[in-house]
Every structure is written in C-alpha cells, then in structure tokens.
Length: 159
Image 1 (cartoon, helix red, strand yellow):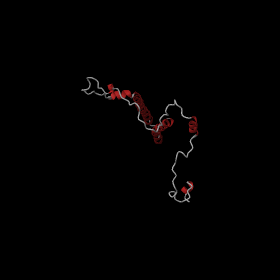
Image 2 (cartoon, one colour; image 1 turned 120 degrees about the horizontal axis):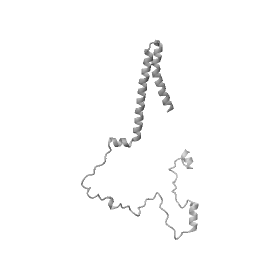
Image 3 (cartoon, helix red, strand yellow; image 1 turned 90 degrees about the vertical axis):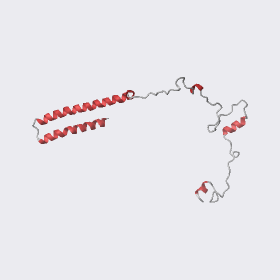
Image 4 (spheres, one colour; image 1 turned 180 degrees about the vertical axis):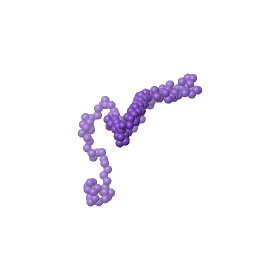
C-alpha cells in the first residue's frame, strides 16, 4: 500500500478506484450552540442576523457628494491659478535643524584648520632651533599625524 492509501484508509492502491463520498450537511451533527437555538424555537421579535464579512451585498444607501464640491468658483474659471513654488530660501527655512547641523560642522572644520596651523607653527619653531638630532626630528615630525589619527580614532570609538 502507498502512504496516501494508508492515510485515507483505502483498500485499493489507487485512490481513484474507490468511490468518492460527497459531504452532506445532514450527516454532520450540529454544533452545541446551534442545537440550543433549535431547541428554543424561533423568536418573533428578533432582528435579522448581521451579514457575514465574506458576503457581498449592495449597500442600501449610496454616497452622493454635495454639488458645491464640483462647482467652480465664480470668476476664476477662465484664468488659470498659479501654484506656489518653494524657493531655495523657503526650503532652507523649512529645514532649520539641518542648517544648524551644517553650520556646526563648518565651525568644527574651521577649528580643526586653526589647530593645525598653530601646531605646525610651534612644531616648526621647535625643530628649527637646531638642537634635535635627525632621529629626534623624524620622531617629532611623525608624531603630529599619529596624534591626529589617534584622536580621530578615539572620537569615533566614543561616538
């Protein structure tokens, strides 16, 4: 026997050879709630049951929009109305928070450039005094970019 014939308890190997039984609602017992309703009998002043969500019924009232909705305003029907277009400055005013963030970023860049100029000036004056050995001069010159990279790395790690 095949697996399907075991599941459906068919004697023959082909499920098509067995007669197919049709479902009939009379053979199935009614649920207990329906049995209670049938035992009570029909009620006379009972409202009709609400329609099931799956049933498609025509609505009893159709929506009719007010006629004023479709009427054009007097005097403005012939000439076209110009629509308002946002200018560049209007869009900037609407995005005020983004502009504040952009301004703060610009200030940070200016601060970084000024710190760079000050550091370069003092490093050059320290190196040009002439009391450093070539190896010490190389270490001092390489320390500046390494310090900047470490500072950026720390800022990124903290954020």
